[in-house]
Amino acid sequence: MDKIFAAGDYKEEKINKAIKLLKYRFIKGLSPYLSDYLTSFLYHLEEGVFIKNQNVLIIPIPLHWRRENWRGFNQSKLIASDLAAGLNITRSEQLKRIKYKKPQTQLKKLARHKNIKNSFAWKGGRLDKKIVILVDDVVTTGATMNEAARALKQNGARKVIGLAVASE
Image (tube, rainbow, N blue to C red; front, side, top):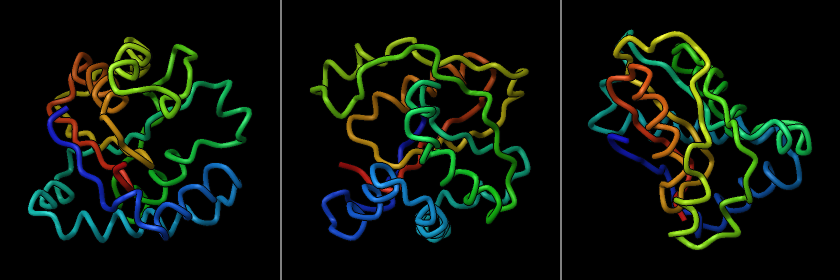
């Protein structure tokens, strides 16, 4: 992982509530607001110049298919879809979670790294030195994003930038 950015703080009441309503109350209509929040954040970053680069790909952190089937959607995929559309950047869903594991929220820091190890695989063609924006709702230790970034870099990504709505 080259860098991880979080637009907000999960302790902030409105952000916390919006994420929880999306994730646990299944209010999918909140994802466009969260992606707008990320878009605004990106434009205020010094690194925001990479948005204009044509070699950029947006990839959501995938859920294992069992968890996605249970929830009915992947909140990161919804946010990434809206973000990609708003920024006119290509989005890919070829990063797959190949291992079903305990939710990271139930684990302490060291256990998170061990739990997520080797859980992702890239199922597409070579990434040909693309800059990847890896999108998630919340980042805590960075274990999930780092492990996903490892799979992407092994498949040719030049740079992987983690982008979360909030950090915990």
